[in-house]
Every structure is written in structure tokens, then in C-alpha cells.
Length: 183
Image (cartoon, rainbow, N blue to C red; front, side):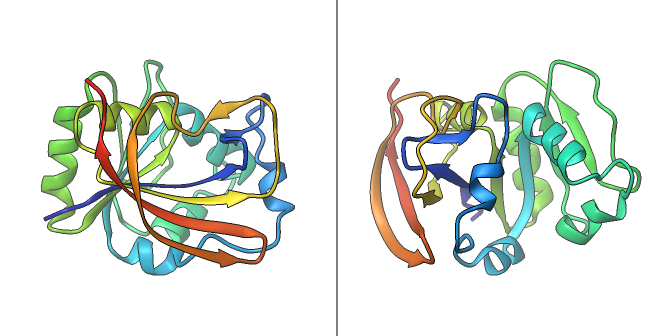
């Protein structure tokens, strides 16, 4: 059965990006998220919000070099949640959606063919999956940086259980099981 995981990085004060949607702070920290290649090898579908999608396109110059998307994600299908019309990456399996995460999750599970689902970002999108009872794990690399403001890791209350922790450079990498989402 597919496991739905929110795999991300955060500042120690709980922000995914600063108030300008920048991740520059993360790239200045030593260490890499624990076991990403192994993690992604088990992913059959992934979802992200429009801010994350647009960040990837702009900051990684995917518009100019669409092959980068395929180099990173191969042929794994992506669902991008947005209320706006966004430009697709040529040759990539990207499905633009809006609204309730439940039918999208069902489509992702069917497409993933027994592989896991990855919620890339943002925190509110992961929270919507949690609110619907569809988020199983939070895997987070915690950087020793405080931002004071920005995009929150998870802008709602969740009860989690720590299942695993490790250090990689300056990062603390933790895997939590979602015990319960309120509601």
C-alpha cells in the first residue's frame, strides 16, 4: 500500500522559505537531506503547490532547460495544485489541479502502482492532505538557521511520533509518523 510522505527541509524556527520565497538560506548549510535518491526511487507520484512549482521553474531555470525536470523526476507524474493557469514543462507529465485533495490523492495512488506518494510543498498543501487523513509521514531536514518569518512548515496542528532521527552535516533529519490530524 502506498505511503503518503511530506519530504522537505525547514529552518529551526519552522519555515520552508523566507518571506521572499527564497531558499538561499538552505543552500548555505552543510549537509544534504538524508537518503533522497533512495526516497525518490520509491516514489510513484508527487504533488506540489503552485509556489513550489514556480520556484523550481524560475530558480532552477527549467523554462530555459526543460530537460532538467526529466533529469530530476524522470517520468514520475506530478500534480500541481493551483487556482491559476500555469505553464507546463514540455515533455513532463504534469497535471494541473485545484480543489479537494481527496480525488487527486486517489488518482495519484492509482497512477503510482504500489509506489509511495510525495508531497513536495508547500506546508499548507501537506496540511490539506493531513486534514483529509491522507498524510502518513513527515520527513524533514532541519537546518540550524532562524528566519523569523516566511512560509510555515505546517500551518496547522498535527500530532506526530518521531520514528527516526539522524545528523547529516549541520542538518538534523527526522522521520515522523502522523498520529492524528485534528478534526
